[in-house]
Length: 220
Image 1 (cartoon, helix red, strand yellow):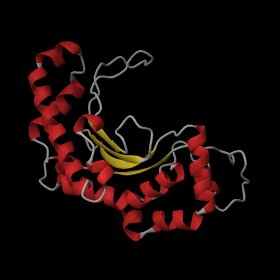
Image 2 (spheres, rainbow, N blue to C red):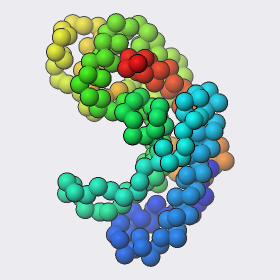
Image 3 (cartoon, rainbow, N blue to C red):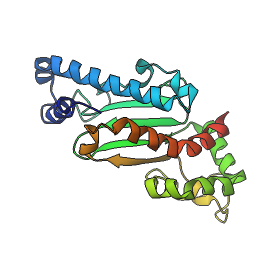
């Protein structure tokens, strides 16, 4: 679980996203960061019992910086208003299917995973794996617990036409049009300070694991 002060800090940061305020509240930031880091370590420890590769990660491998890269952005606010961690084979910077946990008050906390915007060669491999093993892929997506928790894959980033090498009548065409393969679920704010938060995150990862394993196999 997170401390209420951590959730409160993120809520205040959203209203005061500027360097003078952040500098004046650096102690609160450091305490909140330590709290989140401790949570990430607990997640690593617990999920690592079923996935040794994740269990071998260190917190620094997983946690993203709070500082935004504003060089090419119209939004010049300097800080992210959330804490986030990626649990991938080899750490968050390795572009490989994995899990993601994002703490943001206001009902915007998100627990999900998959692979976002793989490069062209990786995308070809994932599409080929789905095309060759559609029945297996759909069985994963339609598994009762998976479907109830996540619903359909996210489709915000999708081609309007069949990708090169595939026809519109391909049975897998709606999956093959995807450019990212992502699923996830939102957590309400109450869950953040509940003692069962780690269990909730870990169980979400476990439900998602066959999906992650399928994508990982495509790239291995």
